[in-house]
Length: 337
Image (spheres, rainbow, N blue to C red):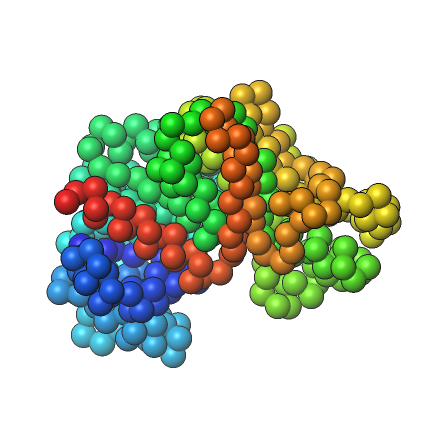
């Protein structure tokens, strides 16, 4: 299977790493021969139909910062759309930066791939949160697959779990911690008694929180995931504007201490049901499945037959997120056997 990777930030590099780590295993286990035929970043691209070396891609990016410096096959100042016109590939890996205003340019990349009868795997929340129905219908019309496990919860296997493991169940609601950054901040505030501002600053220094952390701490990132879960699992037709959002920036140490005295923790929770789409700080009982620390994500699916089923996983990390992307690639390949 030939892969075109648009975007070579943390997730794109993670995909190259896991392909390097798992290439031989994929051949032996599934008969799946993965080749990266194109990679792009802001400098340009590297394109080679016979397959680029994932380790060399990583080295070039680390040493020079520019994938266009790949020897012999590097191309400067070529756009992602031009790459999609030029390259030979079977599956697009769309991991460019998320835009929550209009979902671009990722949305156009995905639609272009569909129109060319190519499958797509993405971690990009923007187009999914804003144009889910349009993308799903385009994939269906073109008889190709759109997979996006990595867009919600990193390595937490919630989407494929719901579709593939619980197909006999009607899922009535989903309730969970869907953002690792906010969970890390709130966990440390509860453990250490430090202020929100202090923990946020340290989280930024450690690379856990972004330089501009607004999407995380104001709840927008979790809200995007709420939309994806609602549309994908509960067959709703909603977008980001349909979610009620309250973030954690106003949570004080006093509020956390009061909660702990009563045996509770404060967590940023996303809730999806037939009549609810919400992200807000909630009280969860200590010792419950939601009392997870660090960047862990957790979600409980309330079903008609299996009652409550809870999944937990790392919500961030390039390798963790790439593991979900690789799982989707394998799923697409197996479906064509």
